[in-house]
Length: 264
Length: 250
Image (cartoon, rainbow over all chains, first blue to last red):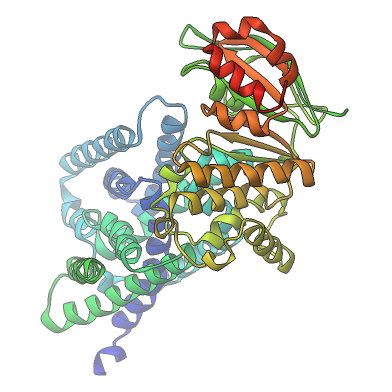
């Protein structure tokens, strides 16, 4: 119990609960809309945006949030107008982000260590201001999901049916894109650019294996995600392992376990 | 009779290919319209244009309002082609899916009230699937799934039902049950129905109007006119045409 007396552990657990809940809930919508890889694409773009921030000496997330929001809306636009399918749009944005990041990190040699901390994340280094920022944004995002729950559910179930029922599908899709973008940037501090999409995909898929009903799937996804983050933090502290990767390994274990149970 | 749908000079061209050419017709309240035609005749395209899902030239009015201004979507229930196949793995329960049909009635924030819950239960009861409300779609048979989608379609008490080949995947027995339900919605609740089908047998028993498309309007009118129109033999074998009409002693 001594572990919970450390401020950095308290910060990690509290921010983990909020951000884990966000990624888990949005993950269910994205997985069912077959946009699982959007987490990968947007996090790779964040790599570029963070490199730009570090290069110019600006707090990287201030740069990353608007750029990733714009990219998320661009992906939505490209898919809606049938210019490109989802995979290709995400792939192109992803390549652009990585290339930008590599170029800026090569030019501004001095900040590569900082950039690495964003690549692999570390929830144990989250500061108090970052914690408050995460909580405020999380509460806003969760409130928006609550208010637009049925619209979000409908566009996930069937876009055309939703449109014919008077749902403003473009608006709701844009809301989903913006929420996803902000959530991904927030989650990068926790598990890093390389693993952030896992936080979107794995709890949702684990929950889909064992849940019946959409609401239940959302609730279970949230519980699985928070549990994984909590256990991941404890294990990483106890055995001095990287926190992001440990959280994902716990998630993977639960996914495999749920798959085995589901098959029986 | 009040016009529910007015179509004037409707044409649809997709990638330089003419899918529908200059269709004009009016559908009145209480009509049960059977829409049929060969594959690629433009049946689904016409429905999609009516619902604003397909760009077109011409004019479409729904409930005396231009389609571009039409906002009362709760008046229309739409069941699309292969809905069950597209949604089979969706994790929602039957209750949650039927509730989606109430969305067009809800104001922001769209949180269902007790009345909405009762309406869902009522729709489930009408289609005799109340006991399935907590099941997910993949646990249901094809016939049960179609009933769920029909319940979702009627839960907002629509005045117009548009159904795109809803009975394709069903066994003949279940298909008949499903069409009986439609007929009762049409006669008892005066709901106007547009039903796309390849199953001519279903038309002869249930539809009072026939719309035969083949990129253009080949036939539009009452069943009696259809039976008296000898040129229809061109499109059907004699026996088929005969069989449709014989059912009604026309």
